Image (cartoon, rainbow, N blue to C red; front, side, top):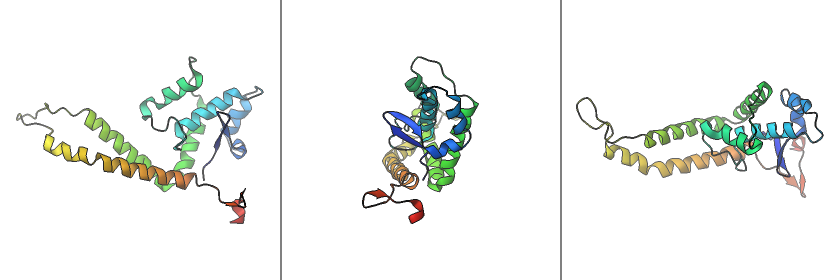
Length: 184
């Protein structure tokens, strides 16, 4: 399980164990304010950028606009650019997710392929011709690909659900209490 952030009162907070690890520790420690507002916003940025969880409001955004949308959501009118520590923490969180789950790596590859397919369909020009005047794209070849889109999206959705289960498995409980991992 790779749970390094929790949602509390509309804020993303790190689990205490992650604050033992650099660069997360440095991000937390450099914020000298009482309520750690800056550190919490920076952790929120990292979480929203990387987390594949269903509860991530930015999970479905395309990578090209995701960072901008998150910054707008967290900093409103302020101009903010992630510094070296935030970039390092983001990379480390991504690394942990990829190493925790082979299906996460596979899902990301599939997602990249789907994004390329979307781009392909958005840019098809049926009027484009070869040197010999023949159509580059034949409608009869494109329509079967469009028909299979629902199957591709369903498979991707199923794979995403599998990744979420693998990474964020619910804790097993005994009499309503969480079982310590060492008890298993």
